[in-house]
Image 1 (cartoon, rainbow, N blue to C red):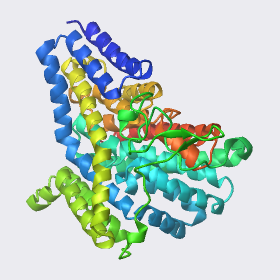
Image 2 (tube, helix red, strand yellow; image 1 turned 90 degrees about the vertical axis):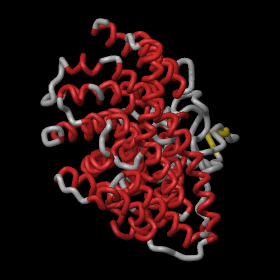
Image 3 (cartoon, rainbow, N blue to C red; image 1 turned 135 degrees about the vertical axis):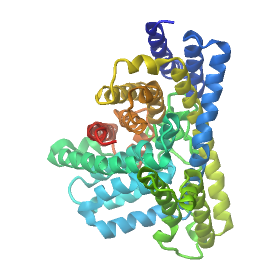
Image 4 (cartoon, one colour; image 1 turned 180 degrees about the horizontal axis):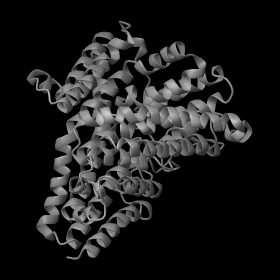
Length: 490
């Protein structure tokens, strides 16, 4: 089969997937499988080869990242139930002061808090940010809204154990320790630079309180149709299942026509049941130890040092299991068995949809690889050129504008370019970071993050387009500009 036919059919498969999601409101999981089957049949894989690629891709990526996602989500659910986020925000305000609060918030949300399911994170952190906003000076509300948006979205795709970062590592075969180190190196300057740029814009007359702010209405959740990158992406597109992936009851219309949603699963921490007040270091310590073990394993591997015990402990599954067991122990001591049981229920509900979507994303990526697209594109690229990274960024950006899902866009774009990496010698982690960066571009009204920030922080739609859409898009551009020089040393 000619190269042109394979390229054309790959483009058709991707566009058809987008069309099924956007135009016909078909569930993203079904749409991705349809796209993968079409590509396999039209690229000459045959019936057996197509089924093998679809099912094998699904199983391979879940074997790689399934337990990691489950352990991360469960740890985050327990920290939520323990009230750790509210206490951390209060500690940041005391430690960083008003001027540094937006920057501290962006970095913390983008790194330490990525184990927390993002809907839950925003529902808890947004009211706290609203109370902090008047204390940080001029334009406090939009600055805090921008910091939350940039930190939450960047962390998802760059920082392990963020859902997108773990999925990208699985699709591209990137060691999780390497993804953790590279993501940390990228996410911190990205969120700081993007937050600084937005601060300058907001303080120079770009924010108009009379039209960019409005009264807060209830505990708003997502509108019908989409969660963007920020919830399990089975509900990412219009009509993809509705409601919040975290179990919310969905949107209701108040008497004045404003959106109002009553979250069901996003409940307040069981503060009344606390028996012991543990320090934040103790609460977050087990998870941080797990991440440090993963990072240590990556460093030792790069240095060529063999240490069997540490090698075992630094295996991502083992390290995150240690973090989960430790978190279970400290939360159980402080809050009792009932809190642990409730957190496990929340975690299993949230992780199930994430795992399904991640698996079918792997199906499409494997089918694209088996179709031979990597060899074709490899003839036009070389490892010392920026073209592959810019291409994956652009593909992810276009897909995100069309679909509205950060995770789907990143996985699909990475799947298109994944076969190129071994052909031209390009590090797969760079493709993962570039795909994540592109998928951040133009977060808009199909994103659950957009509507959570709009409702919970008292912004108008116009205001949220400024703080969330523009702010995260700036972070997307900053990230790819930082990734390009990183490619010279990785």
